Amino acid sequence: MTKNVLAIVGSLRAGSVNRATARAAAALAPDDVSLTILPIADVPLYNGDVEDRGLPESVVALHEAVSSADGVIFFTPEYNSSLPAVTKNIIDWLSRPPHALQATPVAAVATTPGGRAGAGVLGHLEPILDHMQGVVRFDSHGIGGYPGKLDEDGELADPDTRAELAAWLGRFAESLDAA
Ligand SMILES: Cc1cc2nc3c(=O)[nH]c(=O)nc-3n(C[C@H](O)[C@H](O)[C@H](O)COP(=O)(O)O)c2cc1C
Image 1 (cartoon, protein in one colour):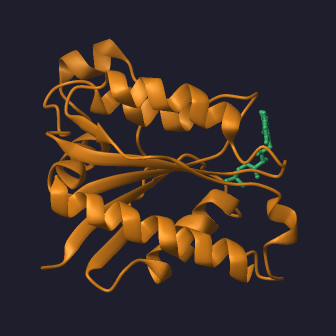
Image 2 (cartoon, protein in one colour):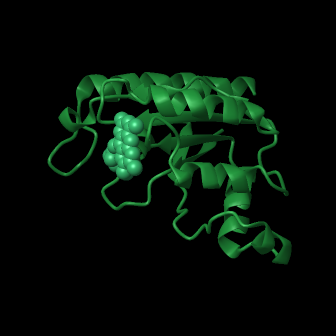
């Protein structure tokens, strides 16, 4: 049966490298995995007053997409050795009722320009995910030195990087069977 995996990209810019990695992941995922990038540009900053008035449509859509997914992958940039607000904001909404993450396998992939391959953001993101109700966290994957790994269209083209991503996706997909 096809496994439905949701990709959440923690960057809003059109030329996002992390979105390019998510696109590559959609193409490289095993045949029995359907990986879909969820649009999140309309999700507002978390505000308890907004929540009390009733969840915005975009937040309802976020919860519904996550609750029907077999797994979730955050494709996140690293900002100042940590999480960008976009990634954290999605996590904050998901940590609130209706608690869409129910024993859901979740993982993170960081693509950065430097050689540390997202060690800063992943080192902060992992304990946050571990703290979230309903999350079964899978090992993270980091891609560093991206400027040399993209083609002229901004797509992830480096063969070794694509092979490593495909292998990681295979392991993540296997973990969905065990979940
Ligand atoms: C505010 C800010 C802080 C950043 N801090 C880091 C950092 O700590 N480590 C790093 O590798 N890259 C850092 N960068 C560079 C980003 O990794 C780079 O801009 C990346 O392309 C952003 O991801 P995106 O292409 O998916 O938007 C930073 C960029 C911005 C805008």
